[in-house]
Image (cartoon, rainbow, N blue to C red; front, side):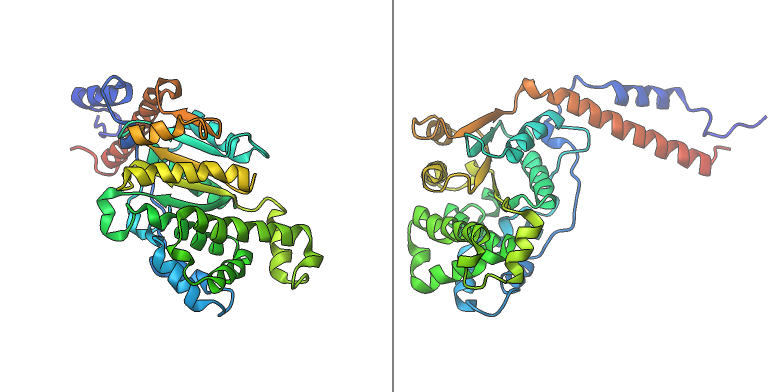
Length: 338
């Protein structure tokens, strides 16, 4: 009687499979959990989207795009091979983050996701971006990277213009308000980060909310754009800004300034935006979050043993082991041993 390899396997193969499926003690970094890849959007896509509504404000929007870093977004092709949480992993921490994202009026408008290098912060941030983008909750994303210095992804001065560009794309109704600000003051992009945030992000966003609440006071109350936003998302416009790798901003003082600026938003325009910030717990960033003016404004999430990363690693190893075993048995079945 002749048996195919699909029925029997060698002792060595059996031991290998057993070790793969039960190995959980080795020091595997959570950041090495598998990456899932999605289609990446080219830089030109953002430029095209900025001008998709009409031709007004072309010069101003070009200047805004030049001051931004459009390659820092979660869909950028410059971030090719981005990591994302593997299915069935990071469930607890993603649930905590999404619970805060979905809360109607949280006391804290910032969340700080901190952990050492290789802890999986960027994977989590990417997964949150993709889920919130799908659910029309993501307003903007910026992934800092000191290794991509030539692209501007290590430059904190590009953060607010990037948020403004992405605001114009995510909520087209804000676009004209942004253009108005740039037309009134052509030097606006040379102002401080706080002023740019107020004029290019907070004020246009507040005007859109006001337009939706009181359409009779708008210049064009019957606009299909206003009706579209009101119908699709009601008064809950996309409001989440994800900033990953803040510690990779090249200037430590700028890192602190970004956190401080975001903390002050609560007192100026409550409930308009919420920010998820991911970084290593570097001294400058840690001291800023611990400052009295900031400490009550954020929810801390620390990647530690509480979130059981070892179990996530075991889940991943089991999945790839099963996949490897299935592939091997299929290969033996289709190419039987003689």
